[in-house]
View 1 (cartoon, rainbow, N blue to C red):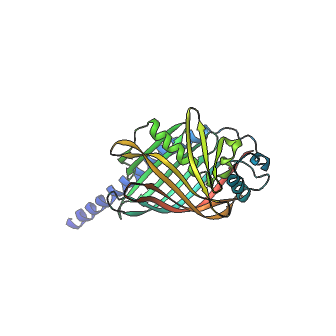
View 2: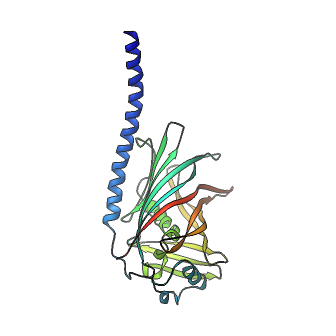
View 3: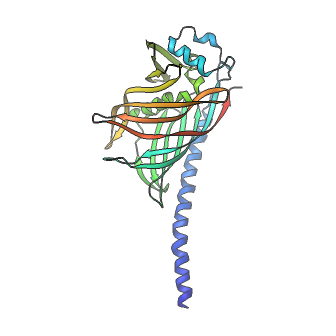
Length: 285
């Protein structure tokens, strides 16, 4: 009898944690499905359907070199993309604490939008579920332990939305036709190795400095003030994304490795680094 009770207790103790984990996954996935349906539902028509190099004629020289390096004449315009990523995320506040992260990201290019759904190994037995998104002109940033207990939930605001649209623009080398002037990006010259790109969505506009290497490829994107959440407030902070290891995907050249970092007064502070393990493009019909 006592043996049966012990076995029953063991089964209960095992079943309850598994049930909690499964419930958290199911609950989180339901929210992800809703957000991605909104993202896809807002997807608009892409005009023109294909890239023609004649639209480069008035662009700054380094921008022209970039497009000629990554696109071929007649390249279909990207309407949407599905990305898979693997890497590390820094969970530390005072000192670095890098943890493994895997993520999927859905992107639509017109109007601009994305949804990043990540799993960060918080402890040996628990993961953080993270959503970072720009959907129909609204920014989203949320992290939950096991998909159940919110540890970060940044309230919707113009500052958050600005930061998320800036992320979309910074990551556009992953979906490079979105950087073309016909797709809404305005380029201004700076010098022979850099140019400023601006993108508007409705009344909101963001701009970033793009830096190009000796082969014409984008290797760094910088902002003097991207908003980040600090103790409940949104604070503008210098920020950058670094790209490397360009590979051919979908007939285009894209960077498959990267790192993002805040430039804090005391030091540069990377917080994500990793690689694109898979990408699927949906092209304009």
